[in-house]
Structures are given as C-alpha cells and as structure tokens.
Length: 166
Ligand code: HEM
Image (cartoon, rainbow, N blue to C red):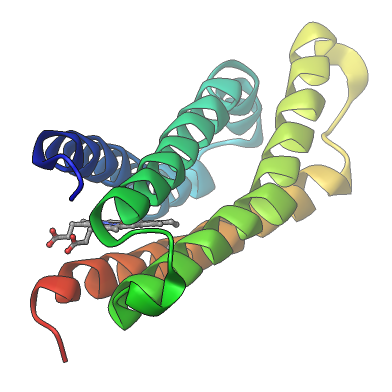
C-alpha cells in the first residue's frame, strides 16, 4: 500500500504545476498574443527579445514538472501495471504528452527563432525590417499555442473526470 502522504504531496505538486502550465498557455492565447498583434513591429521585437526567453523557460519548467509529478503520482496511486490505470487518466496523459511534444517540436523552436531574430534586431536597429521568417514564426507560435491550450483543456477534463468514472 503506497504511503498516503506521498500520494497527497505528489497530487499537490502535480496540480500546482498543471495550473501554472495550463494557466500560462491560456493567458498567452487570450491576452498576450492578441495584444502583440495590435502592437507595432518594433514593440513586438522588443517584447520577444526581452520577455520571450523567460516565457519559454516558464513553460519548460511547468510542463516538465506536470509530467514528472503526474508520472510519479500515477505510479504511487495506481502502481506500475498499466491494466490497473483508469482509462480517463490514460486518455488525459496521452493528451498531456501530445501537448508537450507539440511544444517541443513546434512552439519552442518557433519561439527560440523569434527571440534570436529579435535580439539581433535590438542589438542592430539599423538592420532594416524583420525578415519574413519573423512573421512566419509568430504565426506558427500563435497557432501552436491554441492547439496546446485545447489539448491541455481536454487533458484536465479527463484527469478531473477520474473522480467521476464513466
Ligand atoms: C502527461 C502526464 C500526466 C500524468 C501521468 C498524469 C497523472 C495524473 C494522476 C495519476 C492523477 C490522479 C488521479 C486520481 O487519483 O484521481 C492526476 C490528476 C490530475 N491531473 Fe494529471 N497527469 C498528467 C498530465 C496532466 C495535465 C497535462 C494536466 C492539465 C494541464 C493535468 C491535470 C490534472 C488535474 C487537475 C488532476 C486532479 C484531478 C482531481 O483530483 O480531480 N494532468 N494526474
């Protein structure tokens, strides 16, 4: 029988990191990205150069901790045998992994590229307008973040529904 105190601690840490990850993505999609679209290209470059790396770090830490504590919780609460895992958790963590993978393959590279271009432009303001790659990566980041927000919303619904088995 797993220690109930360990399960409670892992559940607390998993839920707090999931709130940070999901909340951060929703905040970006609902407020930051629409706000950036209304700003001048110069202001977008400044934002991306100075704040972008911190945002990527925040998602990296909260997303990784959600998965690490989630896997620890899964093992402590339901054991290492997948046949004992509730279906709702399996669906929830598959969606969570998909969101994490999408971030690794699409939004993090797009964001890093944007930050790099912006930092170069901030260092060298006479370099002219940003390359077309800037707008392309900005759009890729916005679309990717919307899909990640939807996947995380669905993951949360399935996680919470474990308490109400269907
Ligand atoms: C990707 C790997 C993940 C694993 C292995 C995992 C695993 C778990 C486990 C085992 C529970 C406990 C369920 C129970 O005892 O009833 C849980 C609960 C929870 N998870 Fe996850 N999870 C993952 C991802 C996520 C994601 C991406 C989110 C949302 C962003 C999330 C949000 C939650 C929430 C809110 C609960 C609390 C549900 C409740 O008690 O009502 N999890 N998770």
